[in-house]
Image 1: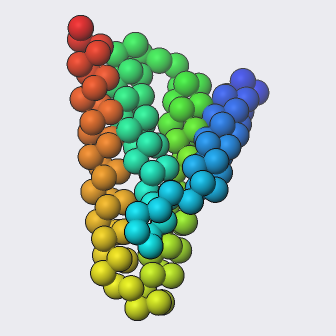
Image 2: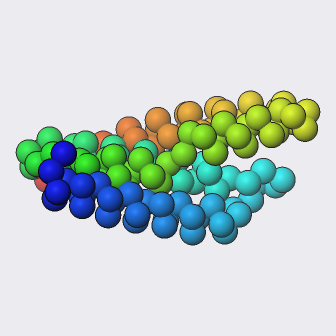
Length: 126
């Protein structure tokens, strides 16, 4: 990895980490369930979906993928926090909320990625 690639990766990571912290620190609630982790996963998937199309359409250099996909989206989204939140719900016998959390994180993240790809494909073809 070259010096400039490390810079792109690092700056993307710092920005994604900062946004993740700001969103999860705000404790967005849906009833008794914090959906802050869900929100960062949806936002990250949507941005990644848009970026994939943009990178293909514009034939972007790899350093931009390091910045957006690996750095920013990688540090913004969080599988470990999602797993911990779900496990905590199960430990508290909140199996219904745990199931909803799993379905929402997986389903909405995939949906957001598809929406981001679709939107950017539409914009790129206009």
